[in-house]
Image (cartoon, rainbow, N blue to C red; front, side, top):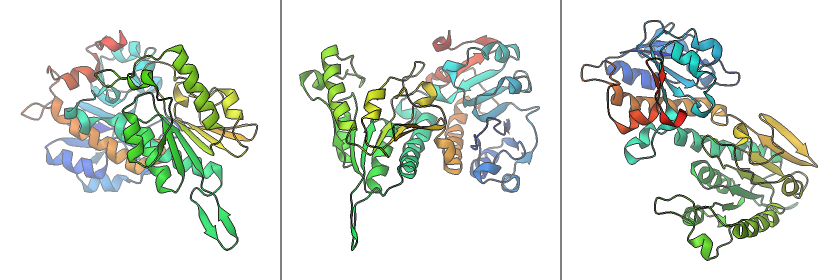
Length: 369
């Protein structure tokens, strides 16, 4: 197959969908790879590094497949070869206005966000690979904004108290945030609506914060999902959370719901109850935020409390984020490759069908219709 890798046009997006390492593996499989000039430069991969591994430098014309990190903008869609296949983080639930243009060019699109959470697809799970880095980076950003030391330091001049870090949500990003804050010496606590998260949080050396009554113990389905809690429980949990947040130095929120606005975890009153100089890092700001005071790609000062909203934390680690994302794509490619090495989308594979958004001028994914 002919594979093209495009340079990201979105401001501040420094990731790239292929690295010299994955290009070497793609060419070894018999595929030809074309890299748009400068695509990897911001991530530390110059054109010459790609050429050394067998890639050519050029545009996407004539390509069977296009690899991108982010969904194409309105100006990009018209420049893509008609009928080609595009694989990227397509931001599918925000794609409605672009779908007519995508279908007009009869583009086949596959969203890496829709990779099923099954064992066989773990190596292709781009959301997890990028969330892992985002969780790490959230702590680094929070520590930098906090402007004080995280670990306890005992010196001849006196003792520096350790920072108190509270992570709200113990998914992939949250667990990595917990681990990173612990490695930096913070006193870490965390919360999650799933009872099973308690053991995961404790295994990383953090304290679990929740109202652990009988309702909480039964708050998980057989499939591992959280049940809807009663209003009474929600009130008790909110009271506990509010009193805990007021004592924290850094709070990191990670709660996201696909296709829906992010839930509010920290009210304006809670945020302003924190000590001046404290920091909130809202990882859900791109979907409305877990705190109503956060703003995309800004650090807001609310009565001395700094609230940071970063919409692209993985992009702040472009080399590692690109490397993991490129490997996710490399792992997925065999599922749409025929025995002779050509593109084959006529498959009943559950991973492919879950990721497929558009084909032949139509939107085919039921989650978008």
